[in-house]
Amino acid sequence: PISTLSSMKILIAEDDPFLMKVYRMTFEQEGYDIILAEDGEQALFRLKKECPDIMLLDILMPKMDGFDVLREIQKDKKCKHIPIIVLSNLGQETDVAQAKELGAVDYAIKGDTDIEDVVKKVKKYVGK
Image (cartoon, rainbow, N blue to C red; front, side):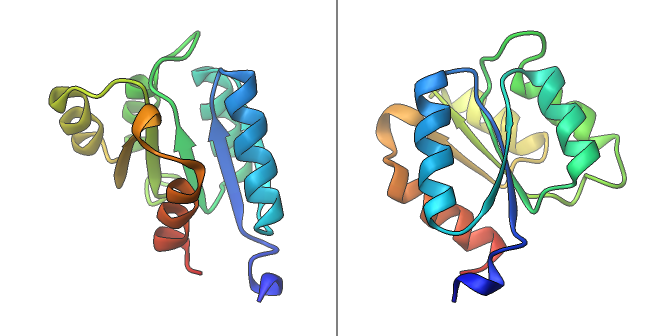
């Protein structure tokens, strides 16, 4: 039931306005609370302030990239446990490996992943 999801918060760190809108609308329809960040610094600030249940993180963003955001999160005892799914256009194995080394629980390449798959991944980490 949606009632169990009502308190679930997703932080979406994405600098593409179109994608941000698609993610927001999709997850709101699924009953999640959405927190948005347009760059890496904002993502880190919102993560620490809001302590979401899960974070969707783009790698290529202004001010601070996703790898730097992941590094900062690892230093923060309060936020370290939050599952982070990287959604990026970077598809090199080295990028995927680096993101996972830095604490990401999952990695999806935007061009190969549709929104339903992203929803499934989120539900896998924060419950149905």
